[in-house]
Image 1 (tube, rainbow, N blue to C red):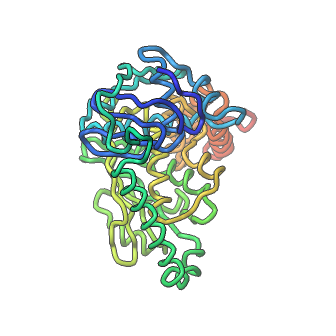
Image 2 (cartoon, rainbow, N blue to C red):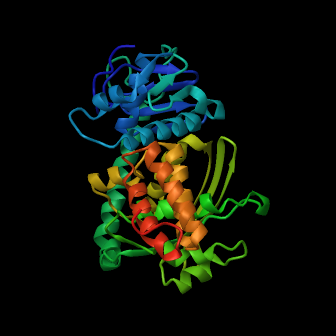
Length: 372
């Protein structure tokens, strides 16, 4: 397929993947499940993969084409691919679309099925004379109307809430709970909360309660709203998590403490290897629902947890879990697991910090000689 030559995803010819039509010119995909607008970078990922169906496209090649000349975290690409899978599945109306893009760990991605020419153009196109179609004119009118209403709201109704909007949001992320008691995995449940706290703590306009404040709320019968009141926060994030071999299921809620309203809920059924992308998506949705504008650097940092190695991440979670328990045996286990994490990924800064903390505390328990 030709025409994929722009990092902003706006150039290129139209094509179809299964029953989903793709129009890069307007950044839209359409299928049985509906019409969705892709972010420019996400559209560019799709275009590049479509140029090489059935072939491995390396992560470095994708990064170089999408962010030319920019030093950026690999997690940004992981998030783009994750969003692309989700939106193809929504537009296609079929979960089988999730399998269209194969992840080759540490190497890149493969689009399993090649693009097809359009038998008929989707509704959002130009007509034969080159003029916008009726559907496109309606769409543009709707967009202008929305912007107009937003402007009116800001001028007449939004100004009064400016002072409130400028106040930092105070948030607590509670330890996630198992879907069933027999699937209790305390390392993963506490670790999920710990990771989201680290992500959200990078945002200047959010104050996030530390893991040491929330870890006591890990009981199955807890009251999340009462926990929020005790922690004196505006909103609480809680949820359930269950891992079944290579799959993970996560349910998450954002609750407003003042009235108990669920501001946002989400469910994720993914491969465990996609856990970083899921954590990034949850963090972004929470920030969006709190109506907090992000700068470019904040967006790039939001979903990055310091490693792309799932094995290193699991060892890190185990190290963090045992570190907080503070018994001599737990501290010794913590040191072992942090060492495993930095062996798997020597550039994992958080794991090095954890190892230093565990070794510092271990002599207090008499398990590691002070000079080690």
